[in-house]
Amino acid sequence: MSHALSDDCGPGDLSGPAVATAPEERPALIRLVGDVTAFATSTWSRQPELRSAADADGFADLLDEAAVDELLSERGLRTPFLRVAKDGRTLPGSAFTAPGGVGAGVADQVSDDKLSALFTDGSTLVLQALHRVWPPLIDFCQQLAADLGHPVQANAYVTPPQNQGFDDHYDVHDVFVLQVAGRKKWSIRPPVLPAPLRDQPWTDRRDAVGRAAAEEPLLEATLEPGDSLYLPRGHLHSAVALGEVSIHLTLGVHTWTRHAVAEELAALALDALADDEEMRGSLALGTTLGAGELDAEQVTARLLDALSSIDPAVVSERLRSRRRGTQRAAPLGPLAQHALAESLTDTTALRLRDHLDAGLEADNLCSRAGTVSVAGVPDDVRDSLLAGEVVTTAELGEAAARALVAAGLVVAG
Image (cartoon, rainbow, N blue to C red; front, side, top):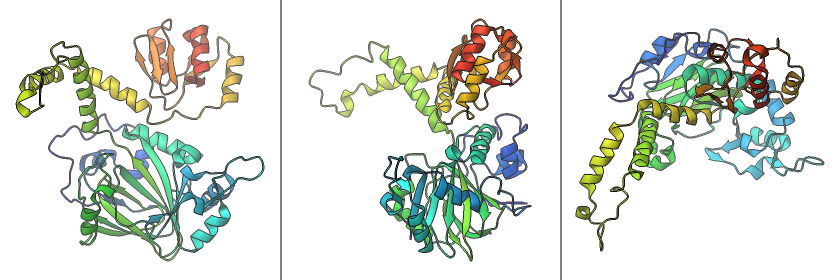
């Protein structure tokens, strides 16, 4: 059961389709929101939504108490993967790290002894970038990113009873909060800056955030295990653990924005002006750079001409290239890949590695794992490969198959 709450803080007048493509099978997103079309139409980037659990163990497969203990005490994590906060303040790494001992050669390994004492004293533990280190979340975040079309990260917040990790603040990315264990009371308030960009953090608006935090909340809700909460970027929030240890996951969605499109348009327009001899020309000798000496009207006209001549397909290619750098492809076992290369025969079944974000550019297969020429591969085989279908070495041609295996673009089918 979901509960959406309107605060009239939508994404603005420019509107596109609620779902860029038909809401076909999107398993990770369906798990979080249920009806994808309804979520896209009424909630996405617009308003918070609380979804009550059908199953109290709803997220135990992604993370649980035992997993937290394993990560903190057995996985050799270092400071980038853990933060510790007390009374709204982040502690220095030295407060919870220690040398790794003989054979480790690192000075900032997470210390389970220090963490135990800090947690008992009321500190919140923040496990960061779990989409890189914990297999269930690696898989889930990759699928959720594919479902959403936007990059996803995962953190976990472990808070002692009756404690608050952070004061009211906002994030510059959308968030799905998944309550894993315990209960946490959330207070949500309207944005002081709707839809903030990455370079517009709440710390630049401390006074406004402080004033807003004193107002009545838009929503107060206690999340139980299995509950989830969606928060569009910019919404102020704070949370307090109640009578037991609370663990929740935050899945941060780093949304692509119209501003990102504008960045690419501007870059392409400036590239075009660099080829214009008049635009490369010098301003008048002795200029004071006064408003009347800038030839601003001429430059503006040329800039608008350059913008209007840009092919949207070129912008799309640039954004897709940027997108490939925001996530990693599915994990690849070096030994398994070596064995595949050694055992390759004409009948070996091969498929595209998951989450490559692969596409054809001329005769090259471009992806997150690199670029390989497929010039000699028949068009129908290329299409089958990109569609996720299994093909054989013989269909690809041995040279192309070996190159694709070596680059990690294809795996055993």
